[in-house]
Image 1 (spheres, helix red, strand yellow):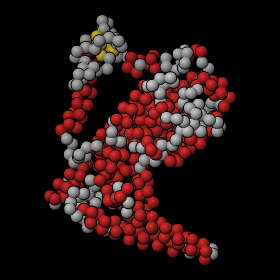
Image 2 (cartoon, rainbow, N blue to C red):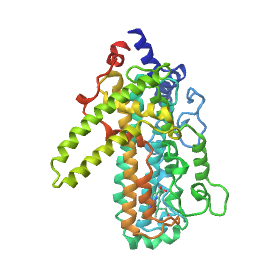
Image 3 (tube, helix red, strand yellow):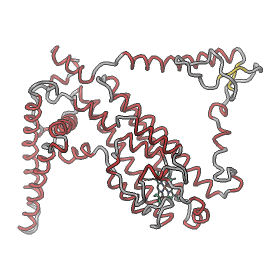
Length: 440
Ligand code: HEM
């Protein structure tokens, strides 16, 4: 079916020349590095920090390849410490005196755990940017969706591991922490530019942030004491300018989802999407009614039975309202986005929906890890300092718990979980063949 074939490709798209160029360049740089390293090694070149890179040791875009430089000894080769920069890395735990020998183990632990988290944040940011760039494109090729899922899944793995690090921090007792805590005022994790960047890139809007209870809010908290600016503030401002957010990019892509074969550019798209939703809502209501009868049968009193039935009625009303957002909420555009999420989740077995469904699932998983990060941090803080005011001046644990509860970006993706029904109960599609690989 050529029509379906073309539409499906318009939806998922083909890699543009620019993206093919980037992929080829990435592979090229890797190959060039390998070749350079073999070639230069043979000629007696090695890694040496601080020397000028050889003209030949430049990537395709003119950037110097990592520290490949000429030295005189023929026996020297690339070393672990030069590549990983272990000397520099291990010299970074000296705290305010810049000298680790002046610090106790507890403080070095405190600094190191923060640094490890910052490194993990860095990797998460890179993967989020890659995924965002991919979705922020006129066309997203099917074969690229697996790459986006890999990025999101890698960010999940990083956060899963990072979340276990709280356990290391919890080895610090209250008294051990109090021994050096006063030195830290008014510094605070609040000033972690990278966590703010992750939140911004993920899609947390400024107006949804929980008030700090301090003048000036988040951006002011990032300024160096007595100064107007700071590297942290500059990073966060750069992130604010680097739009769109991952959420917006995902929505741009999701909006193009053909729903039961209907393309958003078709003149009758709204009518067809609403018809699909109506059929789904009816199927949903049948499922809810059946469950309500079953649950009401276990009620011990007529009052309980009435309460249970009312709960199910309210569930049906809220599902209808979810697909009829007011114009302030985005009207039909929002309804279509929600319908697309529902459609992908419900008919995920259809070949062309398999990867989109993995994307949606990876986003939920990633958000779950961010929530767990906040909750674990809050519990660790409660264990170490109780409920006292934070060094940054916030309400401490109360503030942290509120962020864990309220900061949700992909709310609609979570909401879809509430209203999904059994596959067998879902309405039959008018054009299931539209989503078949045979037509792509
Ligand atoms: C003994 C260890 C720790 C204690 C007692 C602690 C305490 C706190 C408190 C009370 C806050 C609220 C802001 C304030 O008023 O200061 C906070 C925020 C924060 N902390 Fe920690 N923290 C600890 C370790 C860590 C570690 C290891 C990280 C790793 C990066 C971290 C990252 C953050 C971040 C990113 C925030 C800002 C959270 C937000 O605004 O949503 N903290 N911390």
